[in-house]
Amino acid sequence: METPSNIAQINMNIAPIEIHRDELKSIGIDIIPFGNLSKAVQTPHRDDHYMFIIQTEGTFHWELDFTNIILSGSSAYYIAPGQVHRYIGQDNCTGWFVFMDPLLISEKYTKILNTWLNINQGVTITPENLIFSIIRVFESLIKQKKEFFQNQLEYSLADTVLGLFTGALVQQHGAEKLVGGQKYQTVYHFKHLLQSRYKEFKQAKDYAAFLNITPLYLNEIVKQITGFTVSYWIQQTIVLEAKRLLYYSKLDIKQVAFELGYEDHTYFSRFFKKNTGITATDFRLKNHDLSNSNLAMNNI
Image 1 (cartoon, rainbow, N blue to C red):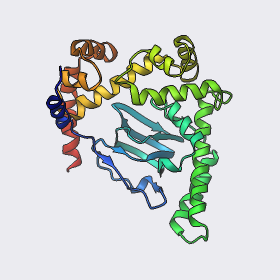
Image 2: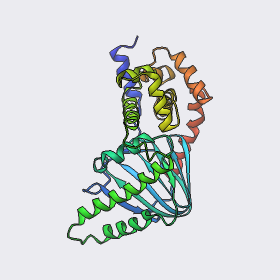
Image 3: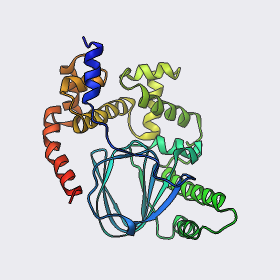
Image 4: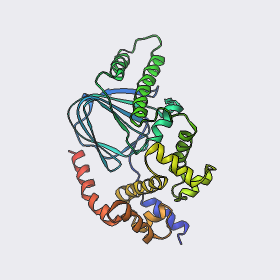
């Protein structure tokens, strides 16, 4: 059994992932063209804000929570606050980064972004999409800084860009008729609940009880809207946090298991291997050299 002193030692061994805070302007919005991006490979980090990548052409390579993301041609992507990411490289890319404080994003758009978080956070869009016209006006407005209602205009244009992006995301998932409905709301609440309670509750029936519905119905609507079952989301949430702890902390396997709510570390080890195809120990060893390499490249 873990004692308070042991728990304190575990917490001391967790090396926090770097969080980029308070980088935005006072109004909580910024836009930066791709040309201003450093070509150096980044150290993996989190942001306290949303980042939207609006690309007109080229190939852009990112790593997001241990997954390689490659954007090609006219496309857009979002990275949510707290997601671990790093820039890897690009080839003949043009486009913009749009940064927004989560408090400025309407609840309707936030629900859409959270519903498809960790599924497919990007969309392919045509070069004629209005988002490219709006974002050019947006960039010019921010550069000039001379309009009488400057802040209000920036808020409006940022909201328009976000509306066009989330609209494309909804259409890509074929969910036009589902957004705003009761099923959609329930799935949103499930995913929101999962993010805060996955260490305590690891069964579909637990979340169904919180939502006052049957596990069968919860599974049905989650699969209908996201394409995946409740069990999949529970497993993937735990696996992702396990990978983060194995990669970024000095906790041993038993401590990682405890941190994730498992009293039996051998059960956790079996769970991790079943869902990743690799043992927790091998995952850490495999990524150790990569981590050191990334740090070295970032310091060149």
